[in-house]
Image (cartoon, rainbow, N blue to C red; front, side, top):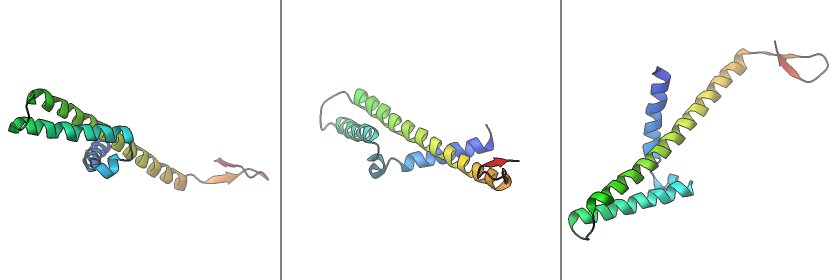
Length: 113
């Protein structure tokens, strides 16, 4: 793996954890509903573990884990896409400064040399 890719993934993982905030999840209604389901299922799992309610704690725990992994994976995917687009925009700004334009006669079109 290249250093750039490692840096991109590391920052994406940090951003994904920051995006677990419900105020950020609210912007994507589908993932917000999955986030709510994760919270509710986790609370039910904890209640089953403590004996306050009856039910299969193993099953509820596994469902809660899968829901949290779904939310986290979606956040990582979004953070990677944002990171790649920011990197591409930064590289395009560098190309714009390095590549001068040339006016083509009386036309107002610009073309590269």
